Length: 425
Ligand code: ASP
Ligand code: MG
Image (cartoon, rainbow, N blue to C red; front, side, top):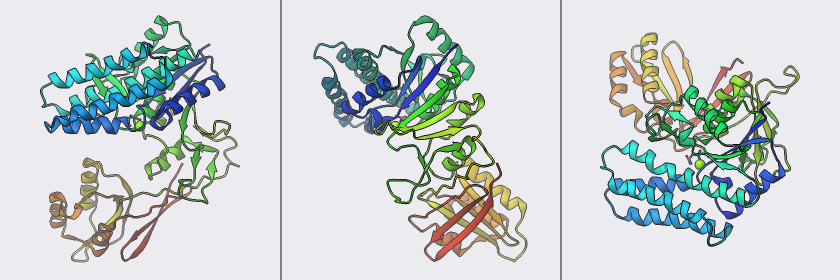
């Protein structure tokens, strides 16, 4: 009977030699019969690689220097963990050399494709260092190239995963290697032709959930710098309380309303198989952290979780009919369709006789958008003072209180407005 656990280590948990030693310590302290370790790029490496790419695509040779700085950083970390003659140094150089040679030979015209071929380096090199270091410490493991497991289409930078093919690949890999511990990468995959792809920024959470799903794992653990899930950001608010148990649905809702708990795609692969997600601190492993579960134990008695998230750039846009006629369903549909097309997150919609108010993620110059002008004209509407004022504020606070109501206080220069919406579970 398979007995898998999946552990995901994000950028902050592997950002330097000290943190990598801590990962080894955690793996020794909490042994598991069968384990898949999913790792992100070290610290802010993905951002640094994005800077390299930007400079490279601008035709500026400074990219060479930026690239070498990233290489030097990884070598420096490895020097603190390994003997001078360790084979890990060759592996690090090989990964950097391949990426550099790719950039020097690729025609600079297919940006998203180039992006994916370059940024995968971050995860490949961090997982190499971690895998070799764990082996040196006696935590025997096999390094797995996630690009040979996670099969995607070729929507570069936000590739869609083919779970069936990925599962077949994983089964083959598990048959091939007689290991009970593997180290692999989050965030990256490859098309059926073997071309590297990525799943979208911060996608490691999602990768880890996919591995947990494919292995039918007993649990998935996210090791973070906070001790579980909190009602508010504990780094900012003194009155934040820790939530020991959160349901999948609550986690999705919280994430949607701006709490940075997890990547939005994380829950589905877990919920389907009822796999528990634990969120724990890699700095305070003695604490149990929070659990995200399918159904809370004693659901009737369980207290309702209330969470507040601070988000920047939430605005209210209010449209009013010029002639005091009722607001039409057609105008509502058109506006919503446009927001959807542009990928603007809508938090609330309310409609009165003559007004339509939409609370949404801010985008610059909404009122000046061509399509907005067309809608206003076509439906004899104008954008009222509220929308105008709200779109000028720098920061708005949004607090979503879930179950049974989501309340939104949107503050703008002239005051604040309250929204209330029932959220059914
Ligand atoms: N390294 C990638 C990023 O920073 C993926 C991840 O960390 O989840 O976006
Ligand atoms: Mg990251």
